[in-house]
Each structure stands twice: as structure tokens, then as C-alpha cells.
Length: 116
Image (cartoon, rainbow, N blue to C red):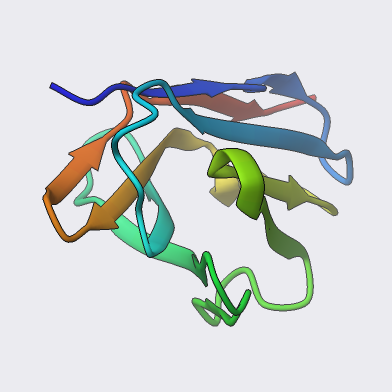
């Protein structure tokens, strides 16, 4: 099974920043679209951002537009999420998702906690 390796979560104060990364561990898995989702405790998982690998086209949920930026390194299928001006409501487990011709894979999740 293809592994997506996430990193970068942690504890940050309101107004702070974090950068998440998601790397594909299997070189034969070549996604064409990668996405970030998050799941607050007790709530459903929600989409927050996507990027197409070839063209770098992006899209965001309204709740993060203007604060979060998704990017990628096409050569090694690594995706990033720069999160600025974090607020308490951004507290969640963040998951990356990669979609390829051979299937879809999910990361294990990384916890982001925004608290003073």
C-alpha cells in the first residue's frame, strides 16, 4: 500500500503559523491531484485545499482562503500546506490525500492544535 508521510503538525498560539508537508513514499505512485483535509474532534472530515501536480492549479475551502497556501514539488510529488493566522477553530487532525490512475491513498494524519 502506498504511504503518504505527513509532518509538521504541532501546538501553536492563535495568530501563529505552521507548515505541513506530505510526501509519497512509493516512487511508482504518481498522483495527479493531492488534497488536504482536516477533522476536528467529534466532527466530520472536511476538504480544505487541493493542488494539481502538473499544472499547480489550486482550490481552497472558504474557511481557509487567504490564510492557507498549498504548494507542491512536482519532481518528487511532495505537497505542502502553509498555514498562517491560525485560529482555535483550525484545531484538527490534518490528512493528506493523493489521487492517481492506480488509486487513492491517505496519510496517517498530523495533529494541529491552536491554543494559548
